Image 1: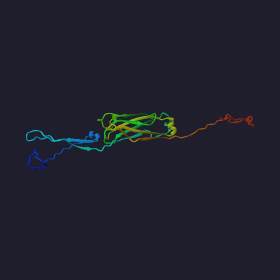
Image 2 (image 1 turned 120 degrees about the vertical axis):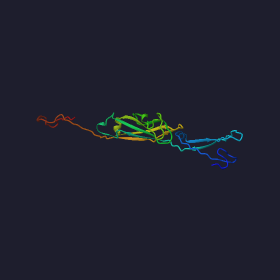
Image 3 (image 1 turned 90 degrees about the horizontal axis):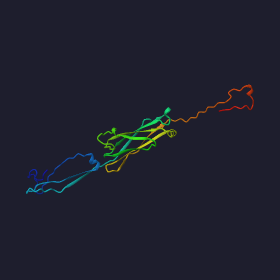
Image 4 (image 1 turned 60 degrees about the vertical axis):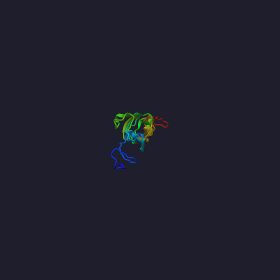
Length: 219
């Protein structure tokens, strides 16, 4: 690519230019930083064997970043009916948090807004990438959490339990990354019913009791 074919390799005459090329593979650290900065210089020896370094030249490549978490929640009982409609019936929730962006998210937690819930507890052994530590999700990585909840009389009166959860984390710049809320509902198949039982103290009247004004007592 030299502009003077009369000079040999490694030699530049005054005004002559030559091109070079290099390749580089993007890393997750580059994406997390949002850019790649590359600095280069050229060194040569003058006719007196003195080094004459060039000035540094820098080029920057910006990377379009995306910070995003998603959460999906399921419950083991979508409908409660029959003998299970009683305070204390246990509901088990499962949460899957995924880094759907292209940068690393750290300090990952789950916020569940259901009062009285036990958890959520993230089981980091379920992570889909064993190379990351606890609290960290690389792009595409998921982790699972669970929580339990005991049904209350208020839930039965309302005929449903609605549970909302949000995943939280921080991007490489320390800024918050929050998922959209995800909710799941358990329907309670309630029946409103009253039972009336009535008895009377006299189911039969004798001849002596058959008179106007006789009193019958009902319970």
